[in-house]
Image (cartoon, rainbow, N blue to C red; front, side):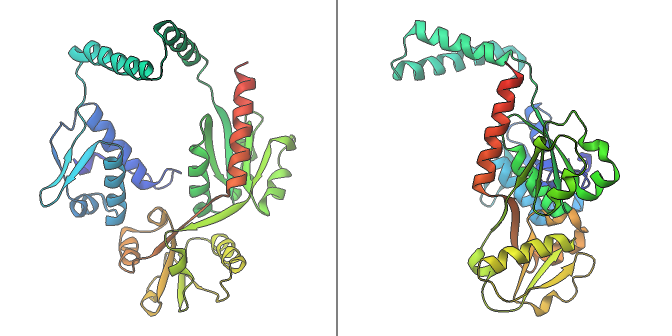
Amino acid sequence: MPGKYHIDPSINVPIYRQLSDAIAADIKNGTRAYGEKLPTVQDLARALSLAKGTVKRCYDQLEQEGYIEKTQGSGTFVKYRSTDKGSRKAAALAAIDEMLEKLEKLNISNSEASIFIDLKMKERHLPDEGIKVAVVASCREILSSLSESVREIEGADVFSYTLAEVLRYTYKIGSDTDIIVTHGEISGKVSELIPDKKKLFCAELTFSFENFAEAVKPGKTAVVCESAEFFETLIGFLSENGFSAIPTRFDFMDVGGLCEFSRVIVPQDHERFCTHETANAIESKRPIKVKAHPDKGSLRYLRERIQKELNEKHR
């Protein structure tokens, strides 16, 4: 099982998500049968040269989505039952019966149910065309989490680039792009590259910590990251929130001195930016993971804007 999965750290999809999607696809198409035992976190991490924390997060995701179940002392097993072709009709009719029973409980008559179902079927036949959203960030750490937030918006077809990429290849945010999401000071540089300034959407960034109270406790703090831009943006956020001590920055290429620090802060998807050995060394420090994302106001306005453009496109 492990050797067949291809993980590409260069794309803007978290590694745990790439792996969970691949395993879920095998389960749904029957390659992994109901009740089959999956490798342990340690075995799969070793086989794919990934951090154990990454594989654990993948399994947690699959369990949450109902594909697998963990049994204490026994292991992890496939829970999802794929429907064979011979029973598709029966399964479909059963699903319709369940839906109609729910509608009856809502006092929806059969004639009303027929109208509502017809409306939904017509909606599904609208052109499956989303809004092309280019996400441009100052560094890969921010780009990864910012893109993940935008992908969660229905109708957003997301393309992700660092500022360095669009400065080098300006055609990446060409005329076919509907909205360009960026942040902070780099929005001015991006604005200079596009003739239609209305496409630009500058998001206000905030940071979410797994444990913010622990992150700002007194003591020596290290931040391990790939870019100075991420470190400086994070320091600005911490300063605004009453954290006066300046953490020490470590590059993923050199984490040998982390033993001297009380706590270590890393980007949420730090496994994408370092080797397997470095990721394991960081995990041994029980790092506090942090994620950069648009604040609630920005996310709300962006969602409304995408919905508005979707409505206009499908009008």
